[in-house]
Each structure stands twice: as C-alpha cells, then as structure tokens.
Amino acid sequence: MLALRSKALARASPAAFRRWASTAADKDRFKVVVVGAGSGGLTVANQIYNRFKSAGKALNPGDIAILDAAEYHYYQPGWTLVGAGLKKKDETRKPLASLIPPHLAHIPENVKAFEPKSSSVTTTSGRTIGYENLVVATGLQTNWSAIPGLEKALADPSSGVSSIYSYNTCDKAWRDIDSLRSGKAIFTQPAGVIKCAGAPQKIMWMAWDRFQKTGRGDTVSVDFYTGMPSMFSVKKYSDILDNLRKERGVGGFFQHNLVSVNPEAHKATFKTADGTVDVDYTLLHVSPPMGPLEFMKGSPIADQAGWVSVDQATLRHTNPEYGNVWALGDCSSLPTSKTAAAITAQAPVLTENLFSVVDTGKVAGAAYDGYTSCPLLTGYGKLLLAEFKYGLEPKESFASVLGDQGTPRAAFYYLKKDFFPWVYWNYMLKGNWFGSKGFVRPTFGQ
Image 1 (tube, one colour):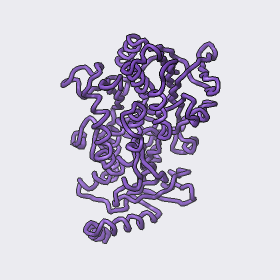
Image 2: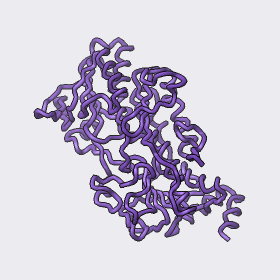
Image 3: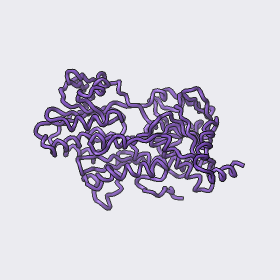
Image 4: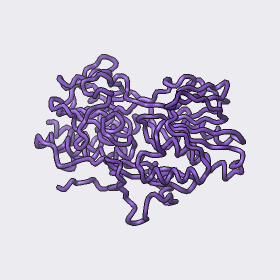
C-alpha cells in the first residue's frame, strides 16, 4: 500500500505533494531523522534518499525527516566574499523551507535531547520523535560572548571592529576595509577549533590587496595575531603563507590569543605564554572562538569535549550500542578541518555505510580519509587551493593538471568566487555534488 501511495504521490501536483509532506512531518517515527539543515544535513538527507532510490529500494516520501527551526539557510563560505566586496550578503542566504524537497519531511523544531537507548530525540517543544537511523549534523557554536567587549564593538558601526563569521557582520568587514585610509589593521585567529581555519587570513589577504590597489599600502599596516603556532596546520601551505606574509610586510604574532576588546580605547588584549599584551588598532577583524553546541555537552552521543563521537572512517557512532547513530560535519569528532568541502567527502561515505547497514546489516567498504579543503584567497584574482587529509597530508585534486597547488592561481580564485557558490545551491544541497569527485557519486569499489 505504501509503495502504491508513493507512486500516486509522484503523479500528484506539487501543491498536493507539499501538503502530504507537511502531514508526514506530523508523524512520531521516521526511518531516518537528520538533525540540522545546514550544509551537512541537507546534503546527506538528499544523498540518502537518492541512494536508496538508485538501488531500486526507494524510500517513501516522508520516511526521512529533517529537524531544524531556522528560518534561513546560509552559504557561509560566501561571507568571506562579502567581506572582500565581491558579493552582497543577501546572495548568501535562502529561506530554509525553499531548499527542502517535498519528499523530505521538514519539522521546524530544534532538538534539545538525544535518547539513543530508545532511538528517539526530544525537541524544544517537548515532542518525542523516534527513528530507525539518526544522522546528526547540528554544526558548532560561535562563542561571541567569550571575548568581553566584542559584541558591543560589533554592534557599533563606528568601532572599526568586524567579523566575517556571521551574516549580520560580514558586510561590516567590507565597509571597514573600504573606508580605512590610514592606521593599523589587525586580523585575529583564535586558538582551538574553528570553522574553516583559513578564513581569518583569507580576509586579511584580501584587505591587504585592496589597500595596495587603492594607494593605501603605505598608510595602512597589516598584522596577523593568531593563537596558533603557525600560519596554517599543514606545513607545506604554512611555509608558503609565511613566506608570503614576510614578502608583503605583514606582521606575524603567533600564540597571541585575543581575550578582550575595548572599543572605546581601540585596544585589543591578547594572551601569550608570558602574560597579556595590549595592542592599539584602527581596524580589528575578529575570528571568534568556537566549540560544540551547549546542548550537546553531556549528551550520551557526545564525547567529553561535546563532539558527536563517530568512527573516523565509517562516521558511525563509536558506541556499538548506538550503531544506528551517525554524524558528519562540524558537530562530529572527526579529526579534520571543519569545512563545507569536508562534507562533500563525508556525506557519500556516511550515506553508503548507512544504506549498507539498513540493506545488509553491515557497513560497506566506504571509508573517509579525512579529506578537506581550504580555498585560501591571497588577493583579488589569486587563490591557493589547500587540499589535505588525515595526518595533515596534502591530497591535491588539480596538481597533475595545473601543477603544484601551493602556487596561487586565477583558476582557483574563480572556482571560489563563482563556481563553488553555484554548485552549492544547485547541486550540493540536492545531494548531487561530490567535491573532488565532481557530479559522479563514488562507488567505493563496488
């Protein structure tokens, strides 16, 4: 009967399909529940649906539910482009409901608790939703309040303080950069885990280049203050970027972690191994500290730090009792850089293993190797495309065609500026883009 109903729905009008999807969202149990409708959640939900369909074992419309109360979905990699004056910020968001196809049930609620022993989640409204398989893709938390004075400074249009790490502030970064005529421009990066660890210096390089191209190179100094010990985690790229920094006369202050901002005095305070140091600024771009979501800390599916504990190859939960729990993206414990590019490699692996467990009771041969990528803008028209895997080992997709990816190239710049945003909205979120594999779903040796 369900199969007949599914075929009937496929012939029905889009409006009828949407009404049915809305009704499906009222169910209290689903074959697959995906928590979070960011890059990871939307991508993997569609890939799971597509995988079952391609195997001739199509799930019924409404068998997969996505839980997320957000009004909008954001293309966060685009915020760097906004900060560099290359995009308008409204190009980086769309209403979330418009991105969820009718065969997926959208439950516009957030989860407040996981109950893996009963295969259920509890939403913030108190609703209990059961699942056969759970995929967690909740992302991470940006801790703006961890730096005293920062939120006040960001809210003040004349403070000279900005950040590309939010929709509300990314355009302020461009206004500050474009209007600065002289003084000291400081760009920060925190110690610890953040989304796209190359982004703090991407916006710095774009600002530096903007100053040069508009005759301000001699009147504006640029300094990089980072809580990390080097320019980048992968030595190959770090060495190249550090040489670039020296060539361009950009100051490098390592293991300097921003701990407070005084917008009235235009002073930033950094913690070092020897204590604290106050630094004057005219422009301050802040990359704030980040971490796991508060509600994840102490959850039965999270590790001690608050990340969802999954096997780094299969993306299945590390606790055998929770074998129907999976995770990907920023919320996971995977020891790799947290980027949208990482999701393009993680989602097919998770999808294949989840499908195999449902179909055969065993995980497939799909294994994630830690692939991630950081398209490092080094100026207008140039980009260093860093690609690497577990062990911080380079894994470059274009080296055999274009040569060493440690060399900034125009071709990579236009991938970042034009192609990646286009492919994200039109293919990735629909489950039809596989990163370095392009438009072809990996088969994992089948």
